[in-house]
Amino acid sequence: SQTAAKEKDEKLMEFGICMFATDYSMQAADLAVAVEERGFDALFIPDHTHIPASRETQFTIGDELPPDYSHNVDMFLALTAAAAVTKRIRLGTGICLVVERDPIITAKEVASLDHISGGRVDFGIGGGWNQEELENHGIPWNRRWKAARERIEAMQAIWTQDEASYSGEFVNFDRILSWPKPVQKPYPPVFVGGDAGGTFKRVLNYGDGWIPMLAGRDNEIDLKQERMAELAALAKDAGRAPYPITTFGTPRDPKAIEKLAASGVTRCIFGLKAAPAEDVLPRLDKLARLVDGIRGGGG
Image (cartoon, rainbow, N blue to C red; front, top):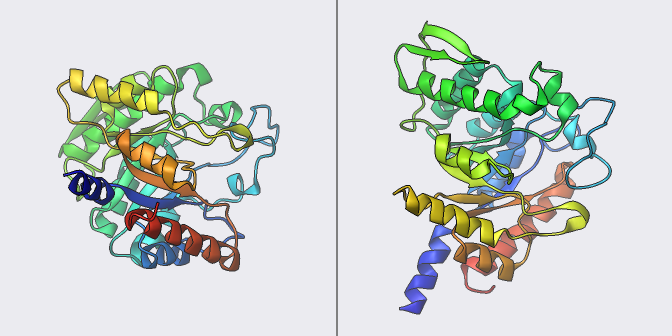
């Protein structure tokens, strides 16, 4: 029946929060507890190793870059603090700038976090948008996605093999031992971020899901429904189940969320500006009421 189908869709849709943990905002552990207590399904924390002072690269979703981006606590440390005080919520890298991170160390961090959390990690990855930031890590901007692919493939080898080797242009190692292996098998789901020409090729090559950003400049929202249909068709052509889609920058609009659910979105993430608890908790409460309304059919 239509009602049963609607209930099925509502059960499938999950909701989460994405916020930078910073040196001026509420601590990641406190945020994680608040997110779990309010019935959300996930907490994602973003990643920047630094922000170049030159600021030559234009910020993708606004004019002024918020201080969140340069005052952030390391993503893996913040997520580990979150893992230690929660039992249920998924813990996501939103997104991990894999090109800026050594793959052997990152494989160890992801597997360790999955071990500590009891298998609750979602590994969101991307190429980044800040050219100078990435090039400070020694990778040419126009080669970033080749470097990203090698890092992901190398990490997948480390996670699944007792003695892992990898040979590439940017990543090379022969027969290494690295434990713990992830709790999730074969490894935490890899969600590919972005929405460029080659994004779906990357999802098909080494991803398990897609994370599009719906919010654009001047608070413009693009639900990307045509792109979602395109990804569904590619999965079908490849003989695969539909890829799970997690949306960042989700509008606080039940009707938009209904459209996203109909387009195959499995989880909506709401972005929050980094701030102290007295600022964040009322906004979390408001979002929890929105989610309750949608889950109860009030949207």
